[in-house]
Image (cartoon, rainbow, N blue to C red):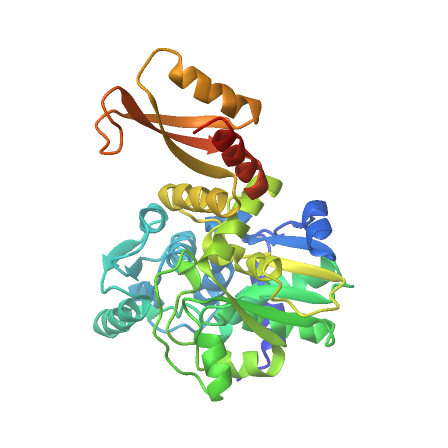
Length: 397
């Protein structure tokens, strides 16, 4: 493999004036909560909404890619396809993106918006990848790998150079892992400047291809489950990325869906940032206590912000429920004037905010002359919810 750090420096020059350096922002609230200095590298603010624009443009714009005159083609579950479409259009080339049938609407519509022809195939990224390679052979178009390619890795590695320029005394960088292109590039850049800085990979429990490969000592395929971190849900880490991960990444951890949802909600509420599941995984690892001890100054790579509205709505609801900030109470009251007012007075006395009320006069456990009431409440915490339930019980409900 060519010296990746030199390719990263070449990529930095190639991307200058095309891809903007993204902000590195300090978070006082996260630093207080986690006990060490926390900075966020905001690739969700990058062109096309994710870091993928870097690698895609670097790969397509680099000299010597055979077949580019016939257009470019790739496979993607969303962000890489948008990056390829954007870069190809900018460079005056046709682009085709093969996507799984399960791709969120926002992602395939965005790829079309950037100028790509979108082809749907299969139920997973790996099935879409196989079809994209077939189409590249049939049409003569240049295939742009999503992650397992030196020039793609080099483009992503420019993030690492930006981190070191902005925060040279960083001692830990947490990065999402899917196929490994992002962390391979970033680790190469970070370690070339500061070899003792720790690079930590974060993956979803639903797709542990990287940790399984490290345990096996070689890239292996794993079965994966649906995940809100769909951008890193791949069955197999790359053949080219794996040796770099093995050599340069200090630790790899995995987090569950609830933790990812909580991290998305935290970033939305505290930092006003819209972040997709894959982008929230590094912070989810920190919030779950999965990072190593002794960190003093950390950077979390927020890799993308392309989350569809319906998923975001479900994530917010799940997050609020898990944090105990939304609760539902159900009780039977007399079907008479003033009965509901008495119930709501008890709730008001506990500072519980009513979000929704449902009357069920036909409920099986509501005898004639009574009605079942279900109330969805906004509360402060699990303990506040317990206090509300106690007050209702003491009032005879």
